[in-house]
Amino acid sequence: MKSHDVRVWGIRKRPYKTPSYDVRWKVGDAPPCSETFRTKALADNFRAKLLRAAQKGEAFDTETGLPDSMAPAKESRTWYDFARAYVAMKWPHAAPNSRDSLNETMTLVTTQLLGDRPGRPADDVLRRALRGWAFVVQASDEEAPPVDIANALRWVAKASLPLATLKNPADIRRVLDSLKLTRSGAPAAAETVRRKRAVLFNALAYAVELRELPENPVTLVKWKPPKVTKEVDRRVVVNPRQARELLAAVSYVGGYRRARGRRLVALFACMYFGGLRPAEAVALRRPDCTLPETGWGSLILEKTRPTVGKRWTGTGEVHDNRGLKNRPTNETRIVPIPPRLVRMLIAHIEEFGTAKDGRLFANERGGVVASTTYWRVWDEARHLALTPEQVASPLAARPYDLRHAALSSWLNAGVDPTEVAERAGNSVEVLLSRYAKCLDGRQDVANRRIAELLGEGDGQEEEPGGGT
Image (tube, rainbow, N blue to C red; front, top):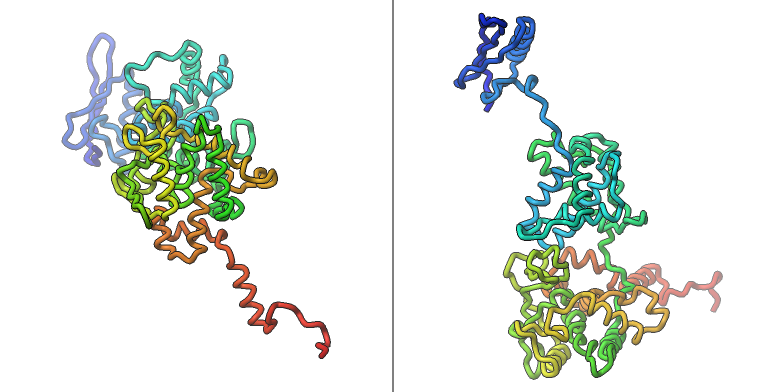
């Protein structure tokens, strides 16, 4: 608490064998403060500082009795100490993927804020120590780190530069520039840079909140991250014939006996015919499906099961179990599905049944289908269904591209964008901004209208002189 009500009394000499001199003063309603000095000159100097501060109108702290100008300098916290505290604060409420991103960014920034201290660990040991231990909130019963990791962490704690270092524009720029590179020194993806910059900005905003920094250093430099491309590359979008051929090829992956591919045909079909995200399809349960014998059915989406890794879930499971993307917890989305997908889901259930918890898609042991599993199957199916030139192209390079194909084909078919957005779980604005270049036929319509405007009919230019 601060106060401008300050009274400074005269110096009092204590008549001991070795004399001492007291300076006494009072701030507001707090008890009187005093400081003892061995010489009168020191006491005079201290009292004069108090009087100057009071005359300048400085507020005095009622606990310490001192104005800000005389408060003892606060020892600057190291970046490493702050970063660990920030991770501990964010961890309980962060989603697993967010924990991974938080850990990755804190590891990178920490390596940029280490002093030149003897005994630096090897780079791989340093990264394992930071990524696997320093910035992971461990359970209380977790085993202690190996000796080399523990030694590396002790070195980091001593070598870490002060958090206040980032107040220097050159240092914060150096840290920001490091976000643009991968570990190998190659340029990082624009989305990755944007994500890491956001994590760093939020961390330093927390430092401002704690009054460790006067303002967020990121705002002090003119630094722009690479532009993130939000539009879907139209080259990844398959047409209906290619989609059918790819789904057929999936059924051949792994052969008939292992059924590795056949187990996933309907999973990929949900992405193409229903526009589902892969993690939504993986989480789909039988009670969420309305599958009539004829006509359209529907899916009620409530959960996603993204693959994130045991380290980040905190439950010991590889897959997170969370709600729909960009939706409140427990909110659902209803997706109508065409008769073809209804038949494929019915056939899948008849052949493979469901997992114990009702999931439609499971691996051979009944577990959640890992992203690495369906990526490998998809890669093999592309080599079976596409030409070598198409395999080398971006065409349907990722399972997620089936969703892109679904949404762009619905828009091309003239379905109202509001309805497409509702089925896809996107806003209309995001939908149109991402799929604008995937809408076929717009260029032909524009060419025809321009030709009509110019009076050129079919667009063929007349020869000079006309002729009859």
